[in-house]
Structure formats: structure tokens, C-alpha cells
Image: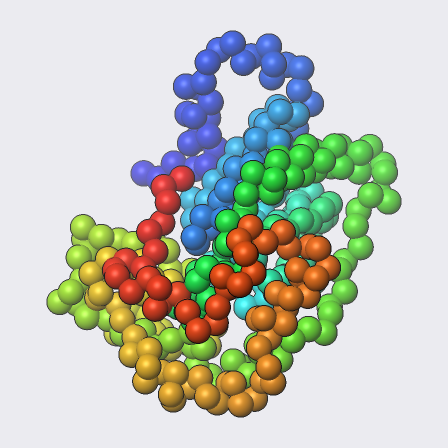
Amino acid sequence: MNSSLAEIAEARREKEDGTACEMVRKRILMKTLILYYSQSGSTGKIARAIHKGLSRSTEQCDIFAIKEAKPHDLDRYDLIGLGSPVWCGAETPNVRRFVESLAHQQGKHIFAFNTHGVMPEQYFPAVVRRLKARGFTVIGMRDWFGDVRFQFAPSPYFTHGHPDEIDLREAETFGVEMEETSRRISDGETQLIPPVPPYVLTEQLLVLAEFYRAGRNPHGYMKYDEKKCLYPKCRLCMDHCLMEYIDLSVEPRRFGSKGKECDMWLGCTFCEMICPSGAISCDWEGFMKEFGGKIHAAIEGNPLQNAAEACIGSGRLRMLIPREEVRFDRPYLMVHHKRPRFKIEKE
């Protein structure tokens, strides 16, 4: 029988040292929940830092990955924090599905946060509207840079090393601020509710439009070889597919948008990155000849580089590596050619 988040959280609290009871009595009687999805680890680091800040000032603060949560779990909390990497301009598909599965929230307070590379501008305009449509009162939002790892991105990337200790301290402070903001809004200071962010015209919209028009996954055409697969010993692709396309426990095994292959314009290629055996693969050279030229012909210049230079020039991005180390002629798949290309850190 599956336990609810409330039961799991209660079990965790029962294991804590009883000396914390006096501290709890001094805290404001507010129950908070951080929900997040983290693919490579950056969003998880930020989520835990926010949780640390909230835990200092609220009666109860729980934190769970989005896959552990059920819609009704939100009912017993006063304040929700929702985090995701930026994916195609907005939240990841699994986070969006969770939000859209919720009943109307009757004004419950929520704040949104994300981690991203150099193109975050469309996230909050889309996500805040989606949360408001579910009846949330969105009391705050904040984003942080995170390291970017996909096959055709330069390695190292412009945001290499983020989030760092400075970012994590900022996230912890943000958690404290969100508790205070929620309390003050509840006390009548509704002017603290931020306006809905406007949509902005950026190069990312052109890139996304070309991806959509092509009808193909711009990051690669994934194929699955059952003979090389280590399932059930390895479940990495199943556990980390943000599209929820993979189920190797059924017969025949289901992989990707086409059953044995994956090629969907909103899809990703993270499964190929983390597969330890090469069971998930792509003919990268052939894919780029077939697909890459069409996209590049429709887009002038290098939108990623343009966006990065704007972030650096404005002072928004603190580069933690020398600028000359970021080279587009050294994509991730060339630098990290051994399997797995990326190992997920344990939280």
C-alpha cells in the first residue's frame, strides 16, 4: 500500500531529535511544501536550499520530488514552492501534467522557481499563468543559472559550475522571504502579490517555432536495443524520462514516443546521456546531416551564443570559467564519449 506524502513526512519527523520541539513552538504556525523536478541535479540543489531557509521560520516544511506527490497532498499545506528546470521555454512536461491535474486551489499561496541555461525569459510568463488558472495566488518567483548538459551544447557550458555557494545562499534567503511575504499577504498586504510577467519577444521563440515546424526532436533521434539493456538492474531511463515514455516492465517493452524509438519535437535525449550500456543510442552524424542543416538554415547566427553574451554583458551571469573555454566546436558528445556520458548525483 502506497503511503501519502503526509504519512512519509510524519515518519521523517518522528525520527528527528526531540530537542527541536522548543524551536518549533517559536516558529510561525505555517505548513510549507517544496515540490520539484530535477534532471541533472541543479534544481534539486536550489530546492533544498530554499527548504533550508523555510525550515528556519515555519512550523513545518517538507520537500519532495514531483514524482512522489499526489494532487491531494497539497491540501494540508499553506504555502507551496514549485521548481523545475526550464524546458522548451517553460516547465518540464511532467511538472506541467501535475499542475494541470490539480483541483482549483482557492487562492492557496505558491511561489515558482527554476534553473536554466541562458534562455529563461519565457518560463515565468507561461508558468505563472498556468498556476493562476489552477486557482493559486502566486506570491513570488526566482530563477538561477544551472549547468547545461546535452549532446550538442558546448562542454563546458557558459553556466558551468552553477548553482554555486553564492546561488545556494541566495536560494536560502529566498525561502525566508517567501515565508514572510506569504504571512504579510495573508495579513492584508495584497500589494505584495507580484504582477503576472509579460511575454517577451526573444530569439528562443524563433528557435522553438522552427523545432515545432520540423516536427522532430531537435536534440536527436533515439533508438533502443533491448539486447544491450541492463533492466531490471538498471532503471535510470525509466526513472528520469520527463515525458514518461519509457516502461521496460511491460511486454513488449515500451521505449519512447514510438515504442522502440523516440522522436518527438518536445522530447529530450537525457536517456542517452545516462544509459550506462549504450542500449539507447543515436546516429549523431546522420541526424545532424538530415535535421541540423534545416534548422540552422532557418535561424541566423547562433541564438545560444547571442543569449549567453547578453547575460554576460548585463552582469547577470557570473561566469565561473574563462570565456574562451566555451567552444561550440567541442560539443558535449565529443568531450564525454564514454558511457554513461553523465552520472546523476545522489541527492
